[in-house]
Image (cartoon, rainbow over all chains, first blue to last red; front, side, top):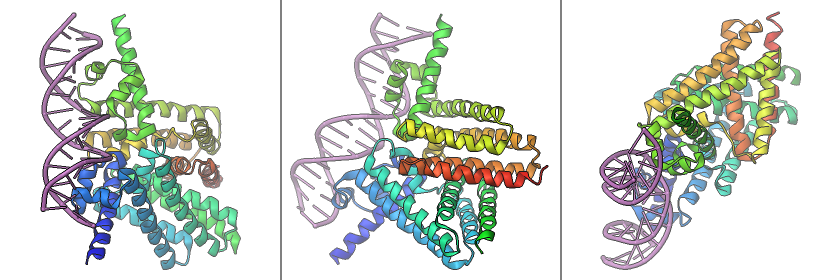
Length: 197
Length: 197
DNA sequence: GTCTATAATACGATAGAC
DNA sequence: GTCTATCGTATTATAGAC
């Protein structure tokens, strides 16, 4: 059906954007390459995203935010202890990077670094994705008994640390930054958690 | 003198690269714009960097690595306690971001995200810069009594956390990620440091 | 309403003037 | 040896064919 195929193509474009942006950055990914990657004809990009690359980038950022937000939620659903869940995400990311030969980074970080200083719309879209993740992390920590302020700062630490560690791991082609950092982030959480009980 | 002016122009090109890459990313920064920013004529880019943009990117990365490496060293020279020095760097970065309206990120991270998956040379250049910073951090921690393994993992944590926090701060246009994360990184260091004495 | 052909521009890189 | 003019190509965006 037409409506079905429309949303399929649109969805494939968003997925292709997410893949290419984390691979080559926002500016390094061309629209033609993106359309080809999605198996979509050239004109369909401007059919689904009349605002051009900026609109596709903003919606890709929203898409990626939901996608990885769901992954965070799944991790917290899987482990009772939020520290354990967060370290598991670090280790999972290390395995993902190894499997892709350290090519697949974070699409939101990639869009942020290329666009935050030149496009208010794209910067705001990235901020929304990060804010969603921080809220999921904070909620899980509060559910484990963390006071709101402690939950917020620990969420900042965990998200900052994993974003940075992904970059170090990609540059060095090594899982060590993710493994070492993940262990210490968990320790920081566990140490504070002792006083919540 | 000719030799003097040559190195001046070359140096201005490297500084312009460092500024533009952290502003718009590696792929988003054009060579023409970069030459204009440096006040250098168009041809001089290929005079000083026959390898073109890739060579300029790699040498800019080395340049930035030394520049910020010196800043890390200065912080450790200023404070006896490495935890205090590291938190000071987080807070300094927050002030720098505020002063630039959250435009000036880390040039090495920007080059890494745009190039690590497509250029082995540039990836390796970024890895060298990060390795230099990790070595400076590790050395300062060991000088304060940290065992080698603890120094290494704490250096990973501190560098990962500040790189990630810069990205979150830029996206949100807020100093909070740097302030909150810096405080917890310092706590993690201080807590371990108690057992070194 | 989809898609192809093309426009307008910016890119990195080079060749040639001085 | 320095710089200017230009090349070929890739970019984003649009217009028009079907």
